[in-house]
Image (cartoon, rainbow, N blue to C red; front, top):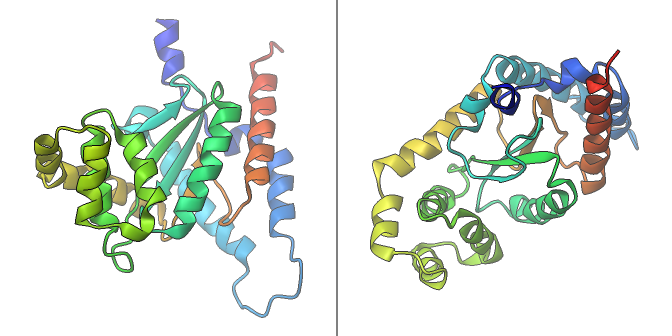
Length: 240
């Protein structure tokens, strides 16, 4: 019974970390490197959105947040890295390479959860690609299909969706039925609803539990943050 309870335990990281090392790292990240003519302070903008993210994430159940989304890494990890992504977004394609590096390094400590956020107003193939990836996932092939979509992002379209399905050995009849089904649309809409509650408007967006990562943060910043979170979790687990 203890193992089951531990598996679904949810730890809001902002409450755990307080104003510790990650707070310092965030301050450094937002420290102005040169005078900014824009009226909006990116640090204040991030802080306002962080409040929304914290409210939504801390009030939600771990199982509900993960749902049936594709995952990689340690299923029982207390650290969950959420990515909201769009298959037609070039920044998402680049970020997917960094995610692979992070998972190689933190595979025993982090559960990675992929959430769809197709920006249909600017990316006409984002929704069809997301539904095709979901359909591949119904046959246990989401991640290889995910990699294929990003690798051939300049070819997104009907021909590529079918070609990738053939190359990885999908049952094409089921694949075509699944990607055009109401269920595929419902699954994507579920992620979009969560993104709306979190007030996310761009991709890729990353959350570590309830911690909103700054837009454009480099791989080194993710590594530094994860290391500090691991240290904080370890310290909290030690008997007082």
